[in-house]
Length: 388
Image (cartoon, rainbow, N blue to C red):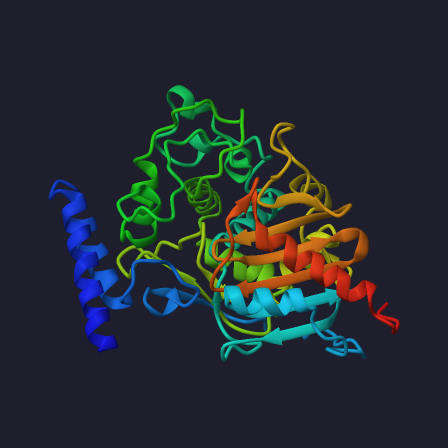
């Protein structure tokens, strides 16, 4: 009976897709959309989507660097609020790192420390870091480099003003609708399309770049295109060589692509890894680009990235979300459905949460985001042993 209901639901979903398109939209996208829904048996995104799309494999480091384990590892139980929200929202991984040692670590629903989970938009922080490294290595002069110097089609009108810094700080002025629920919308198309870069280039610059914060996935995808043109390398290759290798990633990673025809990395999302390896980017930025005594990323670029660009939008810098919870300043990587790497520099704490759902936003961040950090801090504050 459950299988029958599932098939009926799928048929209804496909019918609604056809009806909504009124047979006037791009037939290629229609075919891709129907094919994807049929494969996945659902119309929503999930942290297991790497199983249904093509991926590029990024190799683990040739010198893996396991995180140190604190002597009181998992000695303090989760708070009741944490237990409740983990169960309610389908947490699969929850990790707390203090002073660069793993202090608390739990996995749920069959996930383990090396299980793949989708980064979704946490990947935007990784692409921004790659931009910073490309500047450091001389491929760009600065964040003020014009997009038109590297990618055709951005030399006229408002587009001529667009810089790589505008893309990283979400101030592109692109014609875009960041909707994750509209299967006919441009964001859904970017997730499913086999012509991702062409889709991005088809979107006009309709507002003056560099003036205000508007969060668009297209900005990061275009930034990736610029980086690839400037370096003549795939973004996946750069991330592996510049970050995964020196940061000591312990496991291979998967990065979703738009298909075998173009092999275009979905740079704005879909970097599949695990809690321990995601946390490495948090530590890198916490330590202002230094890793084991080596300056991997320019410290001034990191400092700029984790400060607001726009006074009216203090919640975002260059590739990172920013804020304060209970007098604790934080910066964070963030993806839909509640994928978080949260860093509290003054307390030398990194919190990672991966899972299947999140709550609605309160102002500019999901309500559950605050819970994962607040409850982690409560665990430290209630500890009767020395966790330093």
